[in-house]
Amino acid sequence: MKPHTSGEEIIDPACNIIVETMLGKEAQEQISKVPLSNNTISRRISEMSTDINEEVVKQIKSKRKFALQVDESTGIAGKCQLLGFCKFIDKDIVEQFMFCKELQITTTGEGIFASGRLEGIVTSVNKMKGFQRKLKSWKSAVQKDDVSNFPSLQQPGFNGLGTVKNLILNRLEQLREAVDNYFPSLSTEKLDWIVSPFKLADMAEELGFTAIERDEFLDMSADSTLKVKFEKNDVTLAAFWHGTLGEYPNLAKKAISLLLPLSTSYLCE
View 1 (cartoon, rainbow, N blue to C red):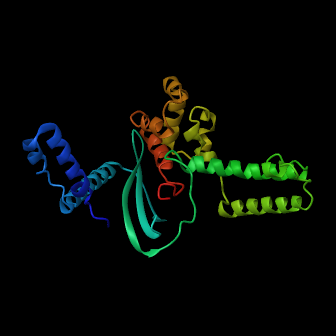
View 2 (view 1 turned 30 degrees about the horizontal axis):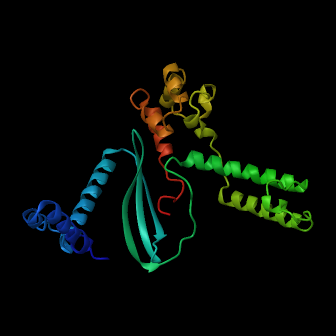
View 3 (view 1 turned 90 degrees about the horizontal axis):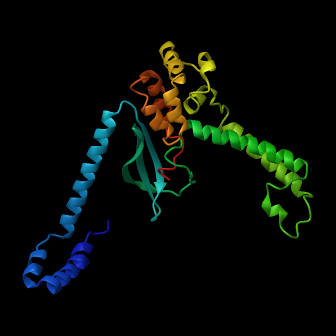
């Protein structure tokens, strides 16, 4: 680890010169007493890190449910690191870094998930379902010699699909098979009530609720004040459901437990 000597070697001399120039020798002697040695800075960083960790652990312990993600990543030096993140709801979604430990092996990064803190099981499944539908649409278009979805095939000098057509169709079919293989059951039908709680009242019997949850769902779906708040779209799903804990506790807890899981490793990547 690089020694913490910047304060002692750069900041301290500069401050001494500035203070002596602006305020005189006496003030400079006082500022020179500020401890900036490597050991002092290292100790303070360690104490701050410990305090932050304790506060995070305290927050997690105060929550009944949370999600934990541990994944392997590669630093700029090519060394393998184990990273940990936690996710919980405190009025809204909170994603908190937990630790980064160097492992005694090396590896390379496999891929990057470009998503965000609002990504969850429901949104990820919806995106994959959308991708499946696009693959089907692209294949149908290519079969009709329509390559508008492939800009590189519309460049000047392109002489038509020819043999490329079969290559594209085969590749699209391979992608479809791969998605079907990795995600054999992509369904959010029983989770749609989280995203559209005021449109599915007539389907309450089909959403997998307990009797208490079903009663709360029917009451909530008839709550016009809450509906107006939801339709304003000025809060996240997590924040909305957290706000219903007081009046509809069982339903809200069920929604929160389904919103918590981390569906990608974007934090660690």
